[in-house]
Image (cartoon, rainbow, N blue to C red):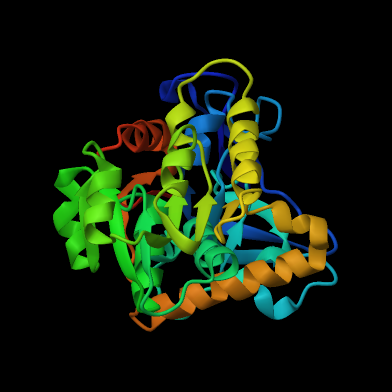
Length: 339
């Protein structure tokens, strides 16, 4: 039996992605093989194809940050009852394949009745949004937050989780996405307008948290919008996606700005969120947190408290078209690859 993989061979345009056929992997102790039902197209892959993701592996490799699928085989030391179960898993790379080998400790069961593609929209995005809201910003009911790029994959999940926590949300986006954001309970503002002025008009005393995926100078502007005791969570460098030069420099600049802001005695806090940073506290603790946090998000979806924002579905063999659409910045939600 063979598996299909999408290969990123180097710094190429989306059309340079390659389709390859390889044997289905065999699990060893502690591993499972998942038959992919849905894999996500995220901003990370956009950076990876440019060779600009902070710690991407050497070319060539199979991209794909997360997926949902059915466990087809399990190695020793794995609960045999997992076989046949639909699960979600964070992979970082390797998800754009028909069959994927992962550590069993990383998988999270998907509740019955949840569509695989819909569940996929909240794997990477859901863990990111949950941890930024509840582990970093520690939002509370009645607070007001600002979400940059509220129409994006992380943004649409984050604003729904925030509204579920009874938090007031201001979100930046292109005007064509404003009606959809209003339906999610968001107060939209045009990202091309004077964002600080628009936010100050809605929250004269500042906001309690800002979630900034833009990086660059936006980190400083976001910091200035915080109320006393507020929290800035920076989690990306979207404005530098097409830059050349050292791929680590944009992240290092964000870290420098975050550290500098934290040195100011004004009661505010700043963080750079990296979903993998928790590994430094121990692999098992890191995995347990991921399973808990994603489990919370999937449960909320199963209960109808948050909805999936699927921008489009493409067959795995059309990964190039999917990536091209993702890079167009014209869609709201997440693009999903299916077998």
